[in-house]
Picture 1 (cartoon, helix red, strand yellow):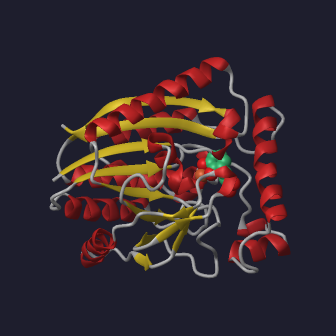
Picture 2: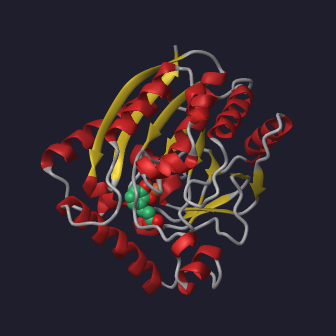
Picture 3: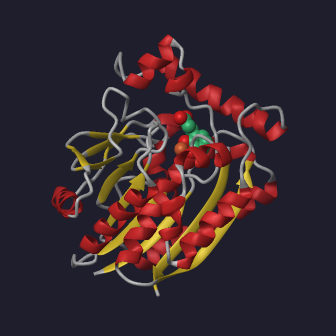
Length: 313
Ligand SMILES: O=C(O)CCc1cccc(O)c1O
Ligand SMILES: [Fe+2]
């Protein structure tokens, strides 16, 4: 019936670092805009494009895309834990439609999601179970990465299908933009990290979880202080991405090379795949307009931080 879109960066550091007053004021305003937009639209269902940071998807078996017919939030960084309210019929309908169009989408009947998937629901509703919620995982941290042309096709196929439903569907994208937080990488992992990346040994112990989170929090403090070794944010790249998304013609992304994305915008810049898929889904239902757009590179959050809303034109 109708689609609307909320795309936002996430950062677990939002609750774990101090922000300059002007930055925190801007974010309060951006989140208020998001809340007003979503409450005004009042969706029947949320279709959520989100990444994962080796909490639900591991190198034991790493799909490019996966949709959950049922899902649970693991609750990292103090995010809300527990089962999500997934409408299985809608999830299955999306999976069947996308696969029928030739985009291979894995399915999970027990998907585990982390802060990267649920933070927008927490910001907007303060409760990850507030609305029926279909999680679509987009691999954004574990190379090799599928081409962006394929991400766009997945979004289009999902959007074409969702536009035929007799429901108000809110598309959420969670991720990006340029950023390079210290997430372990297979290419330079220690033996212990390699086991973690493979998902061996089951869930992290509370101590290991705490150590992992503290490493990211320390990196953020050092990054803000100018002493971190992580890659800098790339505001020009971020602004170009937002410009293309707002233009309604996403075809320029087809020429973006994943290696170049990493080089310019950092190892986690691939989280923008969630934005490209969600905007492609909205665009598949007809022309759209961006209604609100916020951007600021925020080192304290290790994020080129953007938040946009969009509706059919
Ligand atoms: O703990 C992790 O694995 C990464 C945490 C993290 C930090 C900054 C921006 C992000 O998007 C993000 O996800
Ligand atoms: Fe992330």
